[in-house]
Amino acid sequence: MPKVVFVLPDGTQTGVDARDGDSVMLAATQNGVPGIVAECGGNTSCATCHVWVRDDFAPRLDPPGDMEEDLLDLAVSERRDGSRLSCQVPVTSELDGLTVEIPAVQP
Image: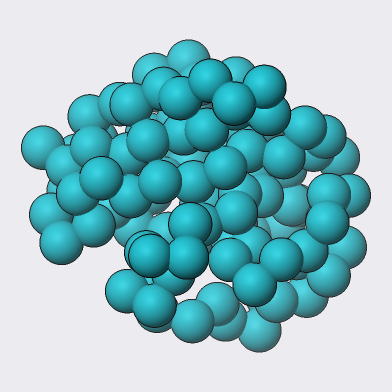
């Protein structure tokens, strides 16, 4: 199982095992990671699962689609180069160790 590492706003890191094909959001919510609200359940209709993907992993991801781009523009937290909606990032074995930071505030 690939591991996803979540960096909480206080700097604490939490690593969770994720199923190949699940989204980063699903891995977070199923493992009780705080800060991923996921209000819409992964339907790309809110920005409450906004994360910042670490630079070393960002190039390995497919680029965000138009709807994700629009929602990231509306996110409460600062938009950065690695900003993604975690519901739109599938976990794969190639992304084992994927590290994402969770903003202090979600909508």
